[in-house]
Amino acid sequence: MQVKPQLQRTPSAGLIFPHSVPPAFGSSTEVAPGILWVRLALPFRLDHVNIYFIDDGAGWALLDTGLGDAATQLAWQPLLEGLLRQRPLTRIIATHFHPDHVGAAGFLLRRFDVPLYMAATEYLQSLNIHLDPGALEAEHYRRFYLEHGLDVETTQRVVTSGHAYLKLTSGLPPTYHRVVAGDVLRIGGRAFEVLTGGGHSPEQVMLVCRADKLFLCADQVLAKISPNVSVVAVDPEGDPLGYYLRSLNALKTDVSGDVLVLPGHNLPFYGLHARIDELIAHHRARCDLIRDACRAAPRSAAELVPFVFSLKLDPHQMGFAFSEVLAHVNFMLRQGELKPFAGADRIGRVVATEG
Image 1 (spheres, rainbow, N blue to C red):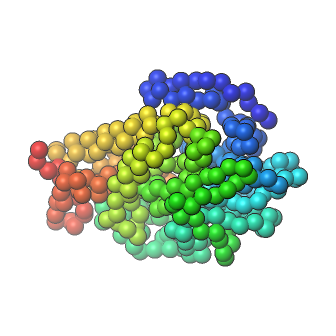
Image 2: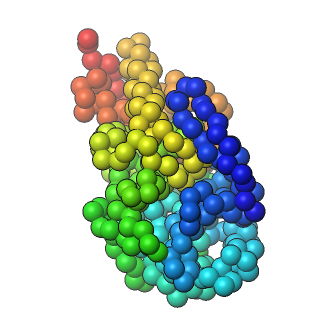
Image 3: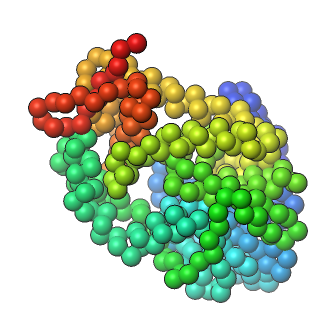
């Protein structure tokens, strides 16, 4: 099914949406010559993921796959029996390790004998979760939440049901094709330069075709939401927000502002540089909320969550919210806007610095 493009403008960001509505789940819309946009359902508040088929001569190169659960595999059947019947997949490019982007890779690769392209960090992270899913409930995960003020009951829910989505994968092949920033992938008649960016995931892959002004940016720049930027338990003092902001600034320098942005969620749009400015301002505003809260009293990451997220959070959402607040705290510690506060209960808290 194809949807006729219509222009729609968002006054807050000056974005232009060439398609005002997405394709129905499992159907396709041609968003540029030789590039099909398909949307697959997700069982979360963010209820969809975008995947893209890129004309690759005898078949289609696929960018991202959706989840690896039974419902998504069932949703793939019309595509397998329709779009891919005469022109099969030639390769799969997974932008990052999150299951909504690489979860169905194993399912698809059991049907199509094609290479999987990923950044090394993303492949190894995904493989680690697949081979050792029980590690998500290990003691260092519990300690990560408890030491930053989350109570025992909520911690238990987060490390069990809150992490369940990470297991929604169908496996990975034992070998893959590594891509790194600066590589050029020739797909059909186009040359796509590989860019990578941190923050949302360690080494997320993005593709830019400068000749045709196309930017497949995965989750790094989304039109209506900010991608989750979280500290992880294995790197509790990490600075993913710093990495993310540096990536946004680099994209603004390196990628033309008039590209068609094809993201992993929300609608494709024009207005890359305006949206980057909004995302940077969004995170600055969150830092301001945290600094104001920490002027009044020392706060742990768990105690700061309600200052940033006003809605009631389920365990899945709490895991994201807690880790994103901690990302802002770690960034602000590095910037000198916060400093550690040593309390008697040994919970990690911070206070605002003077000035």
